[in-house]
Image 1 (cartoon, rainbow, N blue to C red):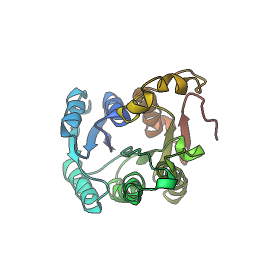
Image 2 (image 1 turned 180 degrees about the vertical axis):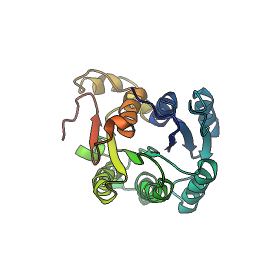
Image 3 (image 1 turned 60 degrees about the vertical axis):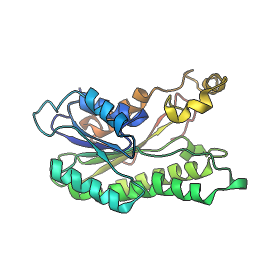
Image 4 (image 1 turned 180 degrees about the horizontal axis):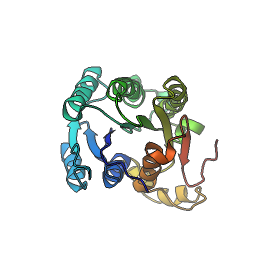
Length: 254
């Protein structure tokens, strides 16, 4: 039912985890995908090589693009590359982020700054820059990847939780500010089976976590990609400012 042939989608952090699953889902729906990565070019190229395409319409082709989104100049170069390659953009999936332990009683100021720059400021910069490329799109939209941590907090990871909570507030703000032209929504995943969580899942940690999830399992990246694709599609054409929870029932918030 979802046909995005001819649409152009940027997935930040598209080379692994949720981003890689989103890249695959959008490509399968016919969209052209820009797989963004920061340093791991090999992972991004593997994702790129597995994408079906180019898009079924015979329009723009997929490509991989490097940028450190914590650096404004690199964000600018990223969107210049999109403009040169595609001439425009239809959807931004703001997925790139980091999750670092940083307890408040031993706060590491450099880690705090890095988390803020990567998880929050970069999304502001990308959304700002995407607006200029949305001109001419039939349904320009942004899907922000937040987290249950932004809804209920997360002990020992308060900088991460704070940035994800701020993204929820930003999503609600932008959805009104940019209406009716641009739709802005967010997905808030719970635990997801990605390399970011590998250490936590060791030594019985996964079983303990799954015991707290009503659906009884940790999400796969594809479980997050499906809702992202929905929000970006015409099926969600009357949805904006929404925070779609994908957490197996572990956090029940409106």
